[in-house]
Length: 241
Image (cartoon, rainbow, N blue to C red; front, side, top):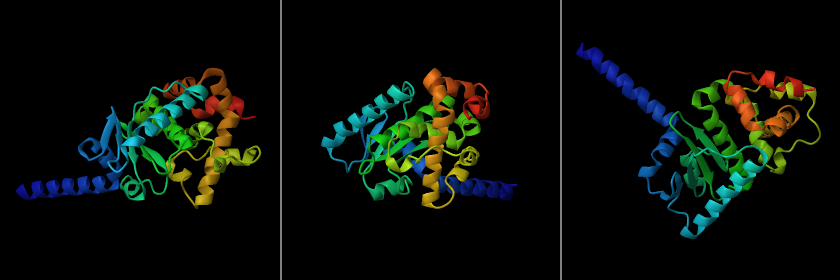
């Protein structure tokens, strides 16, 4: 009996260690309050290596991003924990993998990670949309019902970086391809150039099929319909042609 207990205990420790390693960015984010990061507002932490005179720059950037989202998509109600890192070494600790920002979605909170050296208004607004969608749908509903192409395509509607703008209209064939990329694994698969193409096509697909609904009813309407069980196909069918 004691041997069985030891086996179970060791197995649990190994499983915990494996998960902690695999999700080290989420673990680090969820314990940010115990780190040397400075808290300058509730749920807003900045690296201790960031100069104090940049605090207002961070606050202005966040406010401008929220204003852009409110103007074009939806009233911002999300309150993610925001963590501003400084440079590639700190970015690696949160597994940014070269990106200027990302959102970590967890059952207990959402974490908006920004590399202050590289993040601009487009990046912050884009990532904040992800946080808004996640908070409005909830952890489980977002995982089950929000396709990655749609999540990214919506966020790109207020992201004006030129590399994500597709030249010309999206073809029917490409529309069908991109709207099958429902999972992160399928969306972020392939070369960097291919992934950028996915971003471009997701943006164009939303412009074609979802943006008219947003303009008429608002993004909140779409999220409520998805949350209440309506499929994305049902929502977008009437706008695909």
